[in-house]
Each structure stands twice: as C-alpha cells, then as structure tokens.
Image (cartoon, rainbow, N blue to C red; front, top):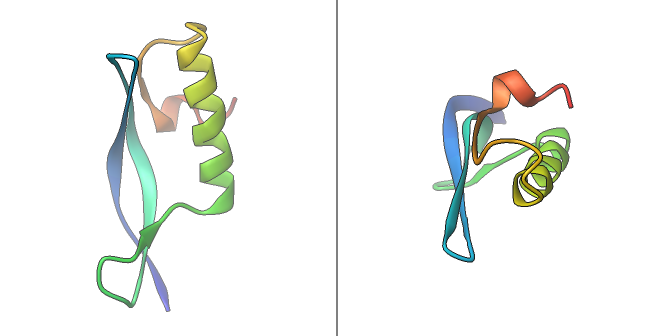
Length: 69
C-alpha cells in the first residue's frame, strides 16, 4: 500500500548554484525509507529544473504555484 506523506523541499546544486523547489508531493511505500515521486511530478520537476538552469524562472519556486507549467 502507498501513502501520501508530507510535502518536501528538493534542492539541486549545479555549478555552485542552488536550485530549490518547495512543497514537492512525496509518496511513501510500506518499506522503510522508500519514498518516491509519481511520474507526473517527476516530469514536472525535470521541466522546472531545466527552466531554472536556463534562468527563465527563479532559483527558488513553490511547486504548488508552478505545477501548472
């Protein structure tokens, strides 16, 4: 069984620059320390990361506010 857990912040450090996405929904399996993002969230995180790196959006964003990209 899979349960939704509290939202977490995700941070990337690329070439000395910190990129942060706040309030990312995370899911937890019934196994210890087994957390994951669903496929839709993973795709959006990849797009957000690319937009941040291209300087098209700020380095710190809230997932809830930008998830509709």
